[in-house]
Length: 425
Image (tube, rainbow, N blue to C red):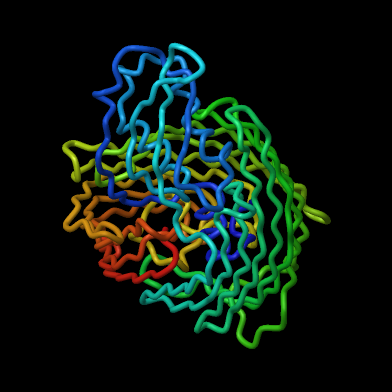
């Protein structure tokens, strides 16, 4: 919601489970679009559902109604189903409409496992964090998202988060979300070489509400509001500790556009999102911030894709407790403990599938990354270097990828490795 006021693990998990679809590989067999024959698509039907409500599963397929059956690309149908994150397409075909001259687009699917405890492990040179989340990514069969999560870091920090997001179940509809959190942190901010530039203890609590409106399957607008209270605690040896805590009320209008495509191995996306935040700070000056993120992932050949991601955060008036980590700039070459007000980052690379199993796809990725940052202590900085790793995408479980990664910051001469289970950045 508001800069770095929410703990990194909670922000990443909330963004992952609420705002971004889970990528997965599907075993797809027997697609028979070529046998459709003439006729317009007059309706859609999804078979194989057990928990998911039919109108929810059919929603992403309604955009094909009115198209000539022979012109429907079944890979677009697969992409639309996979982007929901809760279904795996098995077969796509057309059947005669018993009520008229048209064709019924039929999708046979399997439901993923969507309700289970999620182990969370994040390990790097900076620290290691462990947690457990109780997750339902298809709550009430409506493709709603619900999670209760607890995380503990070896630095002594811990956080608890609860969130629920009601997803619009029509092409045009309103969804909503609600969340709350509490954290107790021993916060340590560092530079690129992990030298400490700030250190203090802080407790934070907050919550928020939001609504979003889907104009169509491509464009979504949102409006959210949240309040967060950051209370400084006694610290034995503080470094650059703020003079006082802050109470912040944030109002966030947002706009996002996104499309997906499926090549038989990867679900790729092209999209952009922008958020503007007005932060009203009690007993201190208010400030504004803008964040922009973009993604362009596209297959060169099936199983081999270009992957370009960029992120911008501009919050020149942000106080220390509202600064941001580098993850918002879509780079991995800085320590997670780095902190700044403003970022502009880009990662450009390639990803190749290695093996496709019945339960998922294993891939290898490599990229080159660059980042500009600015903060009150370090000033203007520019960093660059390579990053890459091995990723596992699960097809039968609505769970993010597991990953083993490495990155090297050329300017800082810093190498770092990461290992994640249950979430990814």
